[in-house]
Image (cartoon, rainbow, N blue to C red; front, side, top):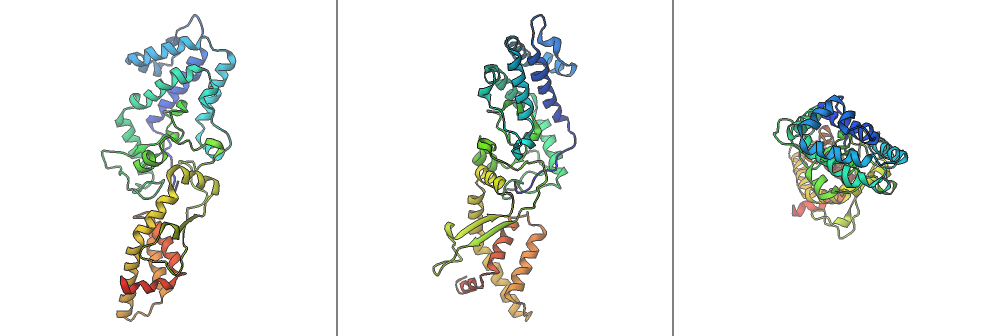
Amino acid sequence: MLRTYKPLDNHGIFIYQTHVQHLVCEVWCNATDGQNAQDLLSEEFELIYSARDWVKIAVDEIYEICKGLTDDERAAIREAFFINNDIESLCEGASSPIELNTLHLVVEQRMKSLLVRFYNELINSREKLDYYNNLVENNNNYDFCPCCGLIRIESNESPFREDNDHYLPKAEYPFASVNFTNLPPLCSKCNKKWKTIKNPFENGRKSFYPFKPLENEFEIIVRINDSDSTDYLSLSEQEVVMGFNNDVDKVGTWNWLFGITTRYNEEVRQFSKTELRLLKFKFERNKTRNHNLTYHEIVSDVIEEYIIDKYDDRKFLKASFLRELLTKSEWLAVYHVL
């Protein structure tokens, strides 16, 4: 994550994870002959159960299957529930998610579809939008996706919202389907086109936790591998090299999930010509007005301007590109063709 979200301290949407924990750990995992599922339901969940036939039917059917679970199978389900919902520990590599194929088949064959349906249907769009608006407002109204920093996102005044990404995919880890500490809003390009169903924790990967402040603020490093044939007005993909100052393992996962290096490389090559034109204009104005500023001073001034609101209009990338130009005054030769 280029930036992370400051989490909401409380919101009504978090009650759904409380309901799911109750249902999985206290109802299904306590299923026994002589009792019905409804006998074990909390008053709050019983309201949901009684108001929706599809909830009642599925809860009862799963309860009957769970009567046959052994103590070890029940314990494994409870353990998986709590481990797979501690998203921060998973991100830090302090624990590993428990896979569906290690649990009783009832989890994958019956619980999974119901818990995913809870996210899709039990939580209505109004509640999701309200949570999104509160979260964005709580984060100084982020204007651009905090994951990539490239795509403008919906404001809290919009009737729409960005995608809630299941950081730990619900298809593989249904116990976290309605856990909103597992649901950071991302732009649709990050979520649908790049991350899709990738698991950020596979093969022991570490990852940035979307709701924890970064230990180090990101600095993107741009390097131009130039040669005698380099055309600064049309840089090639191989000539632009991206680097990062942050945790190398977590950056690796971030890059793998969202194609960050590829996307940033493309962005730099797209705006480089415009940035050169703007600098040419500043140099010409400096000369016309006899300000006598040096190359280094002019470029440094622009960098400082960009840093003021660096997450607006890719300025965090533009500033890094200009830092590289400070070491390459030879690009001034392109003025003749600009």
